[in-house]
Length: 163
Image (cartoon, rainbow, N blue to C red):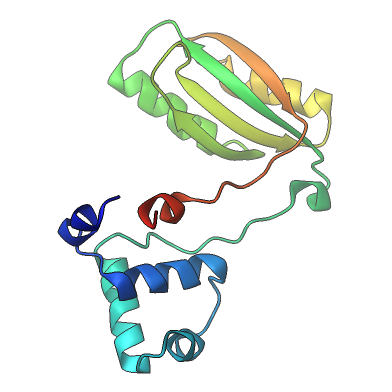
């Protein structure tokens, strides 16, 4: 994002510094953030609240290691629909994200309609997610399952904004 684009989005240098610090360590206290950035605690608290209220910060997440929970097998399930209605897509999306083991789901454009990232105990549990929670929906035409050998986090959107 160019400097003029950041300005039109209402993000100044302090906002970007706060975002970088929060991404690196989301559980940091306001006092620690303010000290690290060299600003008053009240300024820091106000800026973080403003970033939240504007929807720039949309939440704080805890990321779990599925293998530590006894769910060592991860997969991405590609889902293609035979029929596309707003209601059918909405119902399927709601059902997918409510399925135990689903880490995240994407409704996408292109050859596939959904990409579903899951973590399960074993191949049987993976099969059950596909057969009992996805293909049972009348709008689903086909699925294709890809095992995940390794997963890594990307550098995130701030790296693009700060270049």
